[in-house]
Image 1 (tube, rainbow, N blue to C red):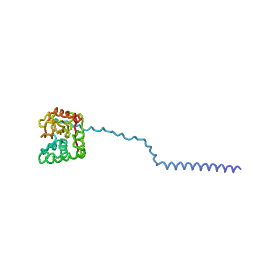
Image 2: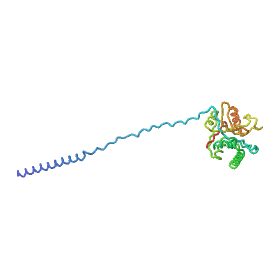
Image 3: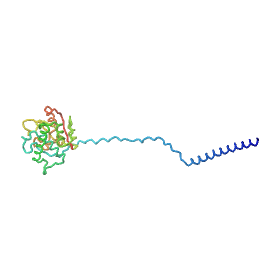
Image 4: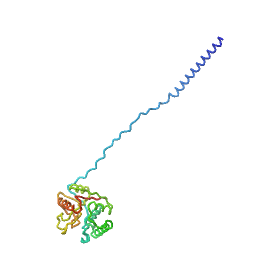
Length: 252
């Protein structure tokens, strides 16, 4: 009996040693297997880089020049001395002068005057277009004149109200002729007839004293009017047309 108990004790000790040895072997194996592996990096949360937004630069304002003159070609509103046909053609004449300025055709056979026959035919075409589309050839307000040039030529336009001398100078300095409404007799020009009528001037320049205009109602290429007379003539049309000191510029 004593011998059998001893054998059982030896067996228990042997199995204990085997289990312990097996445990050590497994520990050594897993340690060796993981020794060469890098631990996964824990990425820290990164913030998106801050973007510096620069303020949009302000466009350079137009510098008003001391004087300026634009090369706008000229036509009488009765180019073939046929004012009886073109008595109401001041808007068409102004539009035609502006049109050739925008198209860059500034001379005609060496002259700044639009060929009379060409001017006559083009103004007649404009008059016919207005009759067809408006039902008549009306006196065009500044807004309507801009709309007409948009519809007829495909140009863009911009109107201005309560305009000042500096507003006119600024647009001319920027290269834009200006069209303004007036009453003829308020221009103090003796070449006008006995009746004061609604009229459109193309302002193309100015100097220290005066504004420089293409006036199609008389032989008025590059004619000069004082600023006081100009604004007096603009004011004079207000009762007839219901518009104040307004102007329009046209661009392609």
